Length: 422
Image (cartoon, rainbow, N blue to C red; front, side):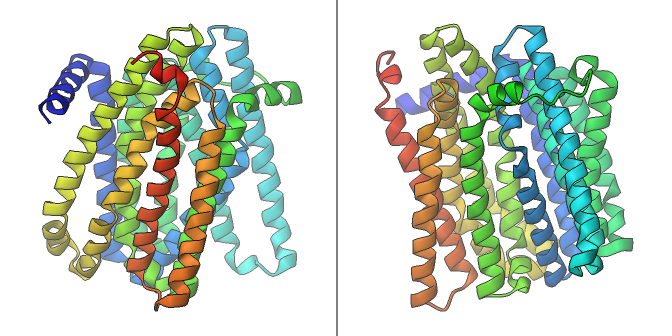
C-alpha cells in the first residue's frame, strides 16, 4: 500500500514539474466544467423527451463521424512519429481532402432525402452533418497540435472556443433542440477557424486524394478505426435499446448518466494524448525502456484521476443535482452504479497507448468485438428475464468495460516487450 502511495506521489511530482502537462490537463478540466454547465442549462430548459432527442442526434453525429475510416487515427500516429515534413504535409492534405469529399457526399444524400419523404427532418439531418464534420476536423487538429507538442497554443485555442461555445447556449431558449445542437457545434467550428487562421503548418496546401497515401495512413489507423466502429455499435445498441425497450423519454432520464460519462472521459483522453506521442516516438527510435516507463507513469496518473473523480462523484454529485436540477435527482444512482465501468474504461487507456505505440493493434480490435458480443448476449438475457429498466443498462455498461479491460490487460501482462524491461 505504501509503495503504491509513493509511486503515485512521485508521478504527481513529475507531472507538476511539467507546466505544459499541468496546463493542458487544467484547461481540459475547465472545458469539462463548461460542458457540465451547458448540459445543466439543457436539463433546466428542456423536458425529458427533448433531452432524449438530443441524445439521439448526438449519437447519429457520432455514427457519421466513423465514416473517417481511420484516417484521423492513422494520421495522428504519422504526424507524431515522422519528422519528414513532406510526409506530414501530404497526410494533412489527404485528411482535409477526404473530409471535403465526405461532406459533399453527405449533402447530396440530404438533398436526396426529399425523395424518401424525410423532408420533415432535413434541418436535423443538416445539423447532424454540421456537428459530425466539425467534430472530426476539430479532433484531427487537436491531434495534430498534440503530435507536434504545441500544447501552449492548443491550450489557448481550447479555452477560447470553449468559452464562446458555452456563451452560445442561449440558443436553446429560442430554438429548443435545434438550438442545443447548434450550440454544441459552434465550439468545434470556432476551434477549427482559430487553428487554421493562426497555425499555417496545420493548413492543407492542395487537394490530394491518392489511394497510395490513404493506404499508408490506414496501415496505422484502420484497425483502431474498426475497434472504434465496434465501440460505436455498443453505443448504438445501448441508446437505441433504451429507446426501444423502455422509451425515448427514458433517454432523457438517463441524460445525467450520459453527461457524466461524456465528461469523465475528457481528462483521461487528455492524459492519453500527452503520453501517446512520447510512447510512439520512443518505440519508433527503439527506446523500449523509456516507452515502458511512460506507460507505467500513465497507469499511475489514471489511477490517481479515477480515485479523485470517484470520490467527488460519490459524495458531491447528489447535493449538486438536488440544488440545481432536482428533477434529475432520482437518476443520480445510475451515475454511482456506472463508476466501476468508468474506472475500467480509463484503466484501459495506458494499455491502448502501449499497444498502439508498438503497433500491436489486433488485441484492441478483438477486445471490442468480444466485449460487444458478450454485452449483446447479456443484454438479451436481461431483457428476457427481467422487466428491462435503466439500471440494467448501467449494469451492462459496467460489464462491457470490465470485459474490454480484462482482455487488453491480459495481453499487456503477457507482452514480451513489457516483461523484458520490468
